[in-house]
Image 1 (cartoon, rainbow, N blue to C red):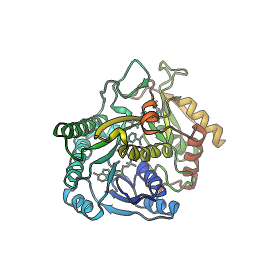
Image 2 (cartoon, rainbow, N blue to C red):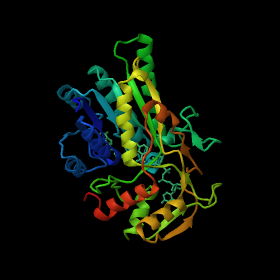
Image 3 (cartoon, rainbow, N blue to C red):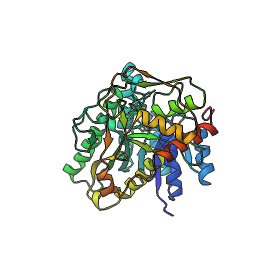
Length: 349
Ligand code: NAD
Ligand code: UFG
């Protein structure tokens, strides 16, 4: 049992709710700050149901400096996991100001409040989308950055801000310097094994797996496979899918690493969280059909603007420095997606 309090921004969301389960099970006290703009408080009731433990929830916006300052004063967290953010690529192209205000300005406010409260351990939700398209399909952390949409650029800007904050402490040789892990997620899918929490997209899903699950259950008539003429093994896009429970375990490992030798003198380091292998869209459909016994109605459609052919992680640094790697396989990801979908056909509603 450890008595550390972890403040989780965006903790009511898809990944955040799974992180709360792991944190509570690891013995942390958990404080969630979420404005519920893309989530429902029911997810947090379910977290407490799964773990048999309670957490503290504040419905607040991370851009509200006064509210955040009061929460930090009351709860005295030692570490923050920062999930809060908007994440729809298409929406970010239509409303870039909204994305920069929410994601970038929100992080500025959060880090100001953290500085004032002298809370300087941070785990940040970044994304593989910060990388520029590369000749190599397997991305290593030192690859060139160059996001190609406002959502991705908001993540890249936040990474820059956090690196600068850490560098400033190094220059000043501050006594308690920033310790920051930038976790670059590949494609999180799946749900908690209980089927009590999972991804509950608003409206029609943008991402492949929730779309496939809604076709399988009959909510949507047909999947469009965006392009079958990519230079990949079957012509469809290849991505590194990672089980959300594996992903959030990476955050617990990151908290441990921040307290360890590697970060003793402070620092800001990026880690890929992916499995290190990719699956194509057709392979994902096939896996879904095998595990569920359902036929997925699909058609081949034109490529989606902005998509790349193939990418997957080199997760070697996370293994070396965080002692983390994925444990679950494709069948687990599909089975858990389906378990959540069938038990909650209308999400949390
Ligand atoms: P989500 O939308 O389910 O969760 C984000 C949560 O943040 C929501 O509960 C939302 O209400 C909250 N939020 C948003 N803006 C806020 C604000 N200003 N103040 C307080 N709360 C706010 O998304 P998710 O899939 O759980 O993603 C979590 C994080 O991981 C995001 O930062 C996202 O960009 C990042 N990420 C997600 C993916 C993915 O495929 N899901 C991939 C890479 C990175
Ligand atoms: N796809 C389809 N049909 C669909 C949806 C997706 O064929 O209806 C294909 C896409 O073309 C792509 C693959 O399925 O080849 C995966 O697409 P997703 O939308 O599920 O995921 P992306 O890789 O495009 O993007 C996701 C997140 C981003 C994040 C990125 C990298 O949505 O926010 O992973 O982490 F930045």
